[in-house]
Length: 609
Image (cartoon, rainbow, N blue to C red; front, side, top):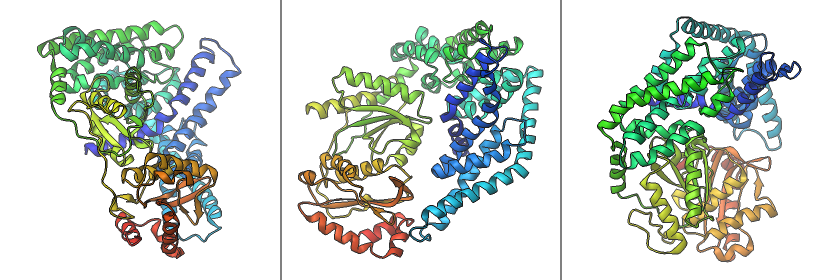
């Protein structure tokens, strides 16, 4: 049940989070240029209504459709959303969050139904008209049927929110939101539920307190200050830096490990937030647009004209209350986080077995912002200080980790998703982005590869694989990969050749150079990337890797459903090409491989030796 709630929460958040910048743009225009704003301008204020009614819901619908079925799903989602937008005076955020995924699902199912059945030369015709027809039908259904139902649901929710406001009960939302936020639904509740409802309320009232239920940094700040004042060891040392990041950076994940190590601190977080929300309710204070990230700076910027001090006082109140409540809890066990970290540090870290060096480290979190950006920035600084600027360090969402990542760093609850997204990267599980023994070991591994000197026992051991036993290895035949660019597909193929021991990294790099000279897309959904002639010296053993993309990898507008990376010693690449071409000369067989399972795909290519 928890996993299902997490998936639903992530889906809601994934519709809204990529568009937060657009929400902020709308909020700033509203706060500055409307008649009661900081700098009233009647002409510019004309942007407010169409952005709210059309732009924001359509962005949500496009993003939701794209999350399900790529660009085609996104376009269908945007068109379908118009059906529920037109004819209603209510901002259709909930309608967009329904129509976007529905349109993406319909497109995805249609594409699966016709895969391999469209004759060569008719693909573009079928793609364009199928998308147009599906989008048209959904837009009409949305306009005639779904839109009325969504309007009823939206009005019901609005009445519920207004009822809570009228009876001063909205502070109790903190009892539900704060535990969910800390335990497994950070960003999902705020951006998936509160933000759409808050924008609708702000359009009617000029501001909304719903924007303050999740983003208020005060409760987390109080926990961190208590850990700083009354903690010991690592708890005391790490809390000051975390407090600054929490207050001004708005990265709430920074205080989660402190709470998870002693869950009773959740009471301090909830009560602190309830007190702030009660204060905001009594003085009728809300923000004009979402505060993202949830920092003091964001709250100040999004406060209505003349009410900035009220927002600051609410943050201060929640900080003081959570600090006072956390005081005895932390003092009773001042070194609780240090104990957890010492325990973790005493355990050996799983060795890293990679043929290629650590070239790119990706910090990953659910949304690709916040904690992952913080972790990447801090570790990048450690790399520079240690003299390793050659190692790239970046951040991404766990669902879109770059295919050329050598190492992925994420929190434990996201590790399985990270392994699915980046199957050829080493996934490192951590508890705290600020200080974790696994990060120390990773830095030691980077130092080892640079100098060749022995690394500490806890560091990763980079092992050299044995020579591959065959031209095709089972682990190098992979089906069902998500759609990606040709560059990412070629990097993935090159990385597999390197890790299998067929080639050195120089050959993998040359595969991208070869693609710049002329495309390796062969037609009929098949691409065969390989290195340049100059890179032959980097080939150690002849071999191939097979990647299947049911939705297609984008090779300059063409969809490659099979990407076969090859490497041949001397002139053996010509022999390998002949074997592959002969095996795939039957068009029906080729088309069937575009959607076959891992076992069937391996069964076919295992015969090429």
